[in-house]
Amino acid sequence: MFKNKYVAILIRLLIVIAITVVGGFAIYFIGKITIPFIIGFIISFVIQPLVDFYQEKAKMRRGFAVLSAMITIVAVISAAITLLVNEAIQGFTYLSKIIPVQYEKFSSFMEEFYLTKIYPYYQNLLNVFRGLEQSERSTVLESMQMIGSKLTDAFSNLVQAMGNGLYLTITKIPNVATILVISLLATFFISKDWHIIIRKMHQIIPQPIHSKINKIYEGLQRALLGFLKAEFKLTFISAVITFIGLLILQVNNALAIALIIWIVDFLPYVGAILIFLPWAVYSFATGNIFLGIGLSILYGLIVLQRQLIKPKILSSSIGISPLLVLVTMYIGFKLIGLIGIVVGPITFIFIKILYETEILKEIWDYIYLGKKNSLK
Image 1 (tube, rainbow, N blue to C red):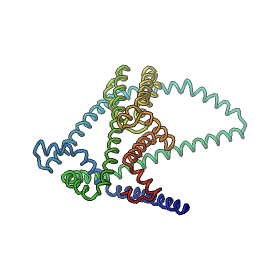
Image 2: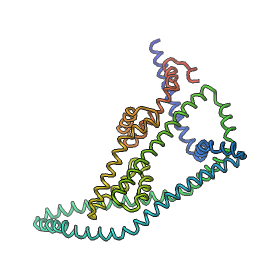
Image 3: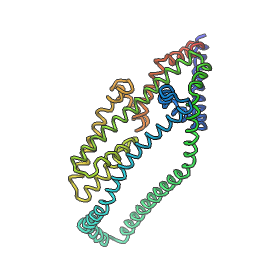
C-alpha cells in the first residue's frame, strides 16, 4: 500500500511534467506561425481605451473609431521619431564637422606616438633579434607567424560574421514587412470585433479557469508594464544626468547627444557604454584629458545611480520588496548570466502569481493527494 501510494505520486508528477513540456512546445510552435495575429491582439488590447473613447465621446462607428485610433497612435509615434531623428541629425551634422579636424589631430598624435614611443622599442627589439642564434631566430619567427595567422583568422571570422549578420538582416526585411502589414490588418479586424471576441472567450472558457487566467494575466500585465515603466524611469534619469554633465563639460549639441545616448541606453547590458567608452578613449588619445576624465566620471555616475536606485524603482513598479529584487537579480545572474538580471525578478513574479491564485497548491494536491477536481 505504501509503495503503491508513492508510485501513484510519481506517475502524477510525470503527467504534470509532460503536460507542462508539451504545452510549452505547443505554445512556442503555435506562436511562431501566428505571430502577426498575436501582435495584432496585443496592439488591439493597448488601443482599446482610445477606440472606446472615440466611439463613445466622438460618436464614431466602431470601424472608423478603430481606424482613427490607429492613425492617432501612428501619428504620435511618427512625431516622436521625427523629433528624435531631427535631434540626431543635428548631432551627426555637428560630428561631421569636427571629425575631420579631430582625425587630423589623432593622426598627428599617433605619428608622434609611434616615432617617440614605439619606434625606439622596435629598434631595440631588432637589435636583440639580430643578436640571437639561428635556431632562436627561427623560433621567434615561427611564433610571430603563428600569432599573425591567428589574428588574421580572428579578423576574417569577425568580418564574415558581420557580413552574414548584414545579409540575414537584409533578407529578413521582406518577411518583417509582411508581418507588419498582416499585424496592422489583424489589429483593425480584432479591434473592430473586440467586445464580441472577449464575450465569446468568456462563454468558451469555464468560469473557475477564466478567473484564474484573469488573475495571472493581470499580474503579468502589472509586472510587464511595471518593468517597462521602471526601465523608462532609469533611462530617463540617466539621460538627464548625461545632459547636465555634457553641459558642465561644455560639449556642443549636448541635448542631441543626450537623446542619442538615451535611445542607446535601452539596449540590454551594453547601453550607454557604446557611446561613452570610445568617446572617452578617443579624448584621452587626442590629448583632451579634461573631456576624457569628465566622460569617465559621468559614465561612472550613471552606472552608480542605476545600481543604487534600480532595486527601489523596480520594487515600486512591479510590487516586490527591494531586497527580493536584489536577491532575484543576483540569483538570475549567477544561474544564466547577464540576462538573468531581468529574467530573475520576472520568474519570481510569475511564481508569486501562481501561488496567489492557488494554482501551485492545486497542482500539489493533484500530485500528492490525487485530487483531480483541484485542477478544474
